[in-house]
Image (cartoon, rainbow, N blue to C red; front, side, top):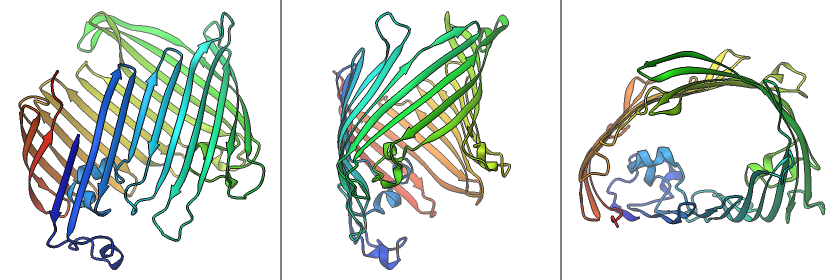
Length: 421
């Protein structure tokens, strides 16, 4: 899909009036996008998303919904091919807008899926990647770091079952080579090893065999678990250029403990998940202070029916007794209507409620709308409704939007849509 937006803004500094903001744009403002998905086969496809902007404030001001999903528009392409035993990806990212920071990269990665070694009781998996990386900063005085990196990780598992107890010891190891480090030392090879084991107990009980609104029968599965990990790296992460998560890994000695509860039922003669709740925390073995226990996390999912779904995530900080983060979502999906209600909460920062609806998606005539309410300020943050009509390969849209600055906008859109074979 290719689209572009251009406007001559008669009052460009209405919202961004600081001297450092004015220096970055003028009346001529635009956005050009090229996005695409091409499937060569069910397991081989190409994804791409490239966005070029006149200034860093354009999307935030005129495309607020896009800004919420991607505050910094993506500029990347990815070719993925998945086989029965190995997955392969070529990934490229290049900064197009110099007012954003970015880690430019060209990376080839290979995933060896976990599989049994011949007829032995052991399972093996591995992952390797070859990357050229370069950090691009916004500040002209910022130092741009670049390096060539090669890494390869390997893991061996030995699953066992002793009655109701499931025990999976594992051994991991790997290495990474960096062409450049922050300390410029000659030692550029970083090795690591790790040992661990996951122990869990499964217990189940049939609560009901009767047919009810959620399905036929109800089975409860309880799984308490412990996951121990001890890892060691040949040198600390502080001397590495932090390109991504791989460069932030360090020595670790922790125990993850949790309780997973699963409720299953049958719908259309198939076993389905009715509800699942996972509650867990981490114990940091080497931490001798009161912070040895990490926060408590709760992740819940519920499929009330095949159309009604409820999801939630919460984080509890035991030391302060607060809930730093809580996300909940209620969804209803049908071919001709989709509805969702979401709540996003950050303690003392944000309490955002969002309701969305899509009517007749993909049909000749359709509509979509949303209302977003900010609980902290007790005000409507934004709202919009758009009506669409589709003719051949073009979709036309006409809508209204109320922005968070109480601006009223009438929008007309023209988009190319996929052709039916």
